[in-house]
Length: 131
Image (cartoon, rainbow, N blue to C red; front, side, top):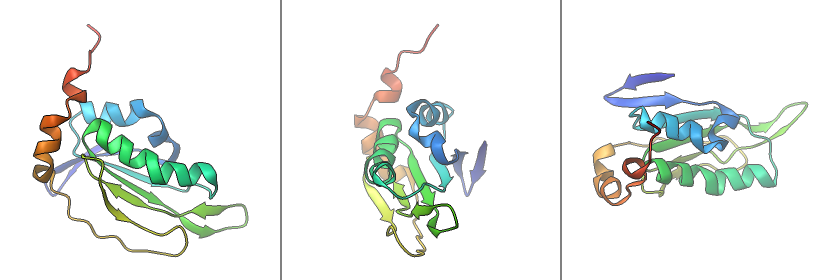
């Protein structure tokens, strides 16, 4: 799903989709500025790894913002990982929430702030596309 919000082109993935690099790459090649990912990832080693490493990597390798918004708390079946993140195109972490408890993150996203990163990181332009 693609849409424009306040001048930024956004793409949506859900949950597990962000864990496959080609999904974020497909949105980056479609010209999105930000990938938004609501999720309900259960707590555990893999959830911690995804939040702490994969989200920033997806942002960096595709030169997009990635907002990974994870459920926290527990229900009758799962305890959720929390640890929502917003990562920038240069791989930096713009905001993070704890693994437990609710959090409100307000982040101003400005693609122009990452012009240098997009100039130096040429993954998307160097990508060989099939003929």
